[in-house]
Image (cartoon, rainbow, N blue to C red):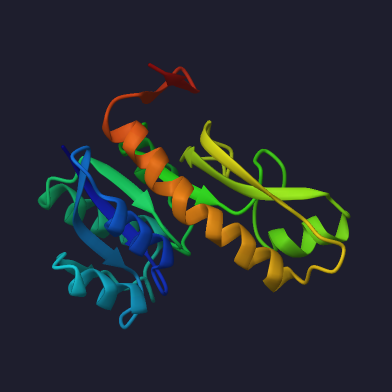
Length: 196
């Protein structure tokens, strides 16, 4: 059973799905937020999971990341899951957790990296969008994809309507991808997601 730490900045909706879906492949041992009072912290506490706040204000990215890294290693975390964590991590941090660090992004990567995804998808008149779970690499949203799920884009969609539809599939997709990683069924090898 892999020891998992989850990094959050907000309400923790994906965190909730990861908590609910935990099985013999992983155990969430710590939730870290950069925002004191993030709603997801309360969600973790309600599930009996230890929480820590590492504020980022007034710190360089490297100093903040080093503090987070120290907390993760002190907790003996084996895997790190980003769930609505609104910070770009330094290359050094990412390399230190290479192959053990995953994120979920609300598009069908490699399309629509970065922010304002749903607005851009609707503007481009795409017929489908979705979510991708990927290994984190130094380049933003560029890591090898572990799992994806798609949703239709309707002509009448607002960005919020599309965001809600994508989030609903994220809640199933993220736990499944984490179970693949935790059980050794996928690993990062030579820049690729290799499935056992």
